[in-house]
Every structure is written in structure tokens, then in C-alpha cells.
Image 1 (spheres, one colour):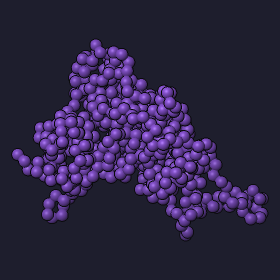
Image 2 (cartoon, helix red, strand yellow):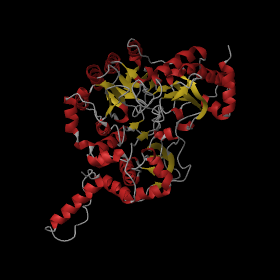
Image 3 (cartoon, one colour):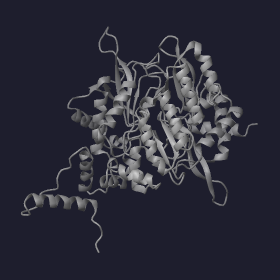
Image 4 (cartoon, one colour):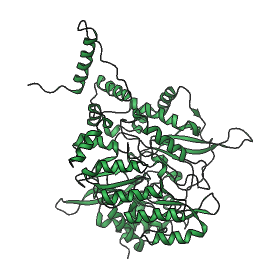
Length: 585
């Protein structure tokens, strides 16, 4: 017996047979037919890899065997049988937003697409019902201003994604090798300092993606963000493509005009922010430019090594000028470039503007930022917030990258009532300086990659440090479970990444963290540097408290924030100061 033909052998034989048939069974076979249809560019890119002697990674082979969007009937059949997916289908179902997360949970997680983080009160109510009837009884707000529903049995998977669509929401393309949820400024359209309202651009990009299958099946996942220069940032510089609103003075005496500055290659889990390309984009051309960038990535991104399959690595290999030239070729025109310093200074972000009441540009109205415990909402809390938004606000809610939610359009004379109603739900419009910037990924309670129970440990750190090292200014602490860096530990003032660490002299290991300091974002963008390794999870609160006390007692002035403190001092100096504080009474 012979082994089954490989995919490439099958493809060759199909072309051979087609050519032979076309010639009536006579003569030399024609060359294999060139791929056609919406998947053609991806198939051609795979063919070039193989022709050059490369070996496609498993995910590329799975996509080639059967495109996930062609496999929906099998997903329905698996749901009918309450059957978990095999690895190839676990990858394919992520195209529908379904992630089977065993062994952490023998269940699916469903990730949504919520462009610019915008929800209506009735959509949030519907998601609360869905989490209660088909999930684990809670919702998670994510660090991409999005929502996840967890603990979904295989038999409920199709029900969940179809009900999501019934609500006017989406999960399609929110996982695997696709363009993820398109983020934007959370206060878009209501922010008094914004340069541009990002909502129409995030929405247009979202629908452009959903309605063009050729933009599915990229070499790896892809993130796009629009930042309108409002008070609350979109962390656009951590995305593959970041559109940053800037003002350009085009002529003496003329008023400045708003453009998007184009930044490329952000992936902070790999220690890189998106870098300014020197290109500015008229807002009405942003979707077209993003499309061209994506198509260059489709053609030339790495399809052999998943670790190197992000845009950053293509930029590293080619350089920005070669990449931008390829984008211009796709566009059929030159990009608009400006010299460094041509843009006016952008207004600074307010690190506390996602919590509490803040004035909107509309007179007499406010947005109200609600602090959630590391992004977790019960169905009752979600319904309650939806009711508050409908009764006291304009009926809209905004999710932020800080894992919380804003209610917009709350009138001055209704603020007190709205805040009281929110407090009654067990969440709050107030948070300590430490909890204001506390972020954590799912952790090993729901993710097979995580090395630690991040959400539980983050709360333990907050509980301990609020009494042992109280603060008078915000400090961001980001707790992530693995190298995927979903909580972006490299941009936190203090970042923790989960690890298996020694717990005794016998060589046993347990949950723990490596601890970093000095990260930042927006105007203070920086990659954190390692301060401690192999800290046991139970020791992390005490160690973090020592770092916070070292900052509080050694800052240059009361106005020096943690970013300034961490940049002013060498790592060894911070460690010495923190070690002294750990042992202090």
C-alpha cells in the first residue's frame, strides 16, 4: 500500500488531469491552473513558498485543505453531536470566533467583533442573556475593547454565534489568521479634545473586512486601530497598523488640517511599538491604504514560521522604504509624506479619564467611566448597566482597552442618580490610583497557554498594595499569563508575565512571575525592562508593594509619575531601593 498523496502532489495531479482532458487525452499536460477566486492570492503565496523549497506550517496546510468558511456544515454537525473539535477544526472554528480552550476548560470561548467598542444598551442585555443561558454566567471585557463569552459547551456553539448575529453583532474573523476587532478612541464623537471622530473609520474598516473574503486567511493575525487624539487612548501604537490623528499646517496663515499619521509594525509582546513611517493619510483614504498594506502582507508574510509571521518581521526583513514602495504599487499612486516634526503636538491623554464622570463636548452632558473588576461582568451587572445607560444616558456604551465600560450622554442633573444605580450593582465609577490601571488577561483558569492565575493574582496584588503601599497618582500594573502578552505587560509601569518558578530546593515548580518596570504608552511609550525573575505568585504582592514604596519614597518630586521615576533611575538602583522597602516594617 502507498501513502496518501501530499497536498502538493494532489494539486499537481489535478492540474495534470485538467490539462490532459482539455487536449482530448493527447499531448503534453498543461501547467496547473492558476488559482482563481477570493482565496487566489493566499494560494499563490503558499505556492511561492513551496516552489522556493519552503515548508508550510500546519495552519497554512489546514487552510489549504479546507477554507474555514467552507466548513460551517461540519461545525453545525459537531454542535448537534456535542463533539469537541480536533486540532485542525479548532483552528478553523476560530474564523467564526470560537476557541476550544481545553485543557483549561472543556468548552469554547466566543470572542466578538465590536468596532470602536460601541454597544447599545439592548445589545449588552442580549449578551448578558447569552452568557447566562449558553455560557459560564459572566462576560469578560478584553484589552481590545471587546467582549468574550466563556464556558460554552460544544452543543451550544452554533447557537451562540448565530444569536450574536441576531443582536446585530459579529464574531466572524475574531480569531486565527484574520484582522481582529478594529479599535478606536473610546470617547469618539463626545471628546472635547479629539481631532477627529474615529467611529466612521473603524466601522468602515470593519465592514470592509467582513465583506471581502480575500482579506481572510492572512499569514497571521493582524490588528488595526484608529486614534482620534482624545483623552482616552486606543493604544494604536501597539497595533500592526495605527492611524494617529494629527494636525498638519499646509501653508502659512492657513488653518491646520487633520490627517492620520501612519504607524506600522506594533507588537509589544515582541518588544516593538508601531513606528512612524513619515506618511500621512487623508482620512477618507484610510481604508484604501489599510487594504493595500494588508495585500502586501498577504503576498509576502511568512507562511512557514508562526513566530515570524507578523507584519513586524516583514518590516524588519525589508525595511520601511521597500515595504511602502510595495504599498504604493498596490495603490497605483504615491503616498503622501511629510518631514519629521511637520505635525503639531497632539493633545495629551488623561490616564484617569476612563473612570468617573467627565465633560463631553456636548454642553450639559458627561461620559461616566465604570470600573469593572479586571473586565468581569455578571449578567445581572451587564443588564443593570444597560438599564442605567438607557434610563440616564443616551443608551450607548463604550468598551475601552482598559477592560472597563463608559456610559455616554449622561446629563448633569442625572449624574448622581446614575452613579448611585451603578454602585448598587456592585461596580463603581470610582477606583483607587492602583485599580484604575490594573489589567489582567484570562490566566490559566481559562487559557491553556497561561502559566499563572493572572486575574486572581492581580486582585491579590491590588488588595495588598492598597494598604501596604497606598498611592496618590495612577500606576498601571499589567499582569499577563504567557508570552502572547494579551495584557501587554511590556507597556505597564509595572508588568508581570507568568512563569513556572522554583518553589523549593527539590526542583519543584509552581505559579509565579517575572516582574518588569518602566513600560509606557502614547506620549510615554517604552518597553519595560526586567527587574526580578522567578517570583512566586504568593510573594508577588509583597514584591510589587516594595517597588511602589520605592517609587513613592524616592521620586524627584510629588509630581513625578512612575514613568519618569523608572526612566530616571537604572534598573539596579530601582531593585536596590525596592529590596530595601520589601524588608522595611
